[in-house]
Image (cartoon, rainbow, N blue to C red):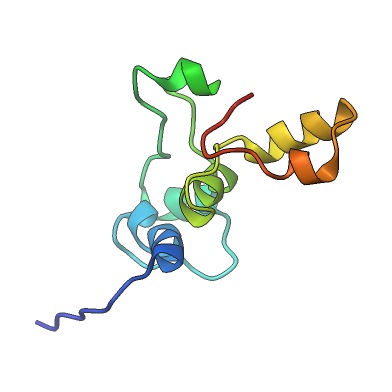
Length: 108
């Protein structure tokens, strides 16, 4: 039995999670969409679960997307819908500087 131990930094944790953990501790093939990789190994899609989801505009049981994981883990705590929030702010005439600078988990 071989055990591999590595130091994982904050930005790397997201990549590790998407490559291995979300596909049942296997190895996700390169360039394979998350949902396809999960289906190939028989791992169900992740689902949002918590009492506080409504405050973030999320629905319990809703499938977690790769973009949402990127925002939450890869971008250090950005709102799962940060891309949508920023687009809405820009569409309403907000400045790019303010639109692309939402507070962590700030839905407003």
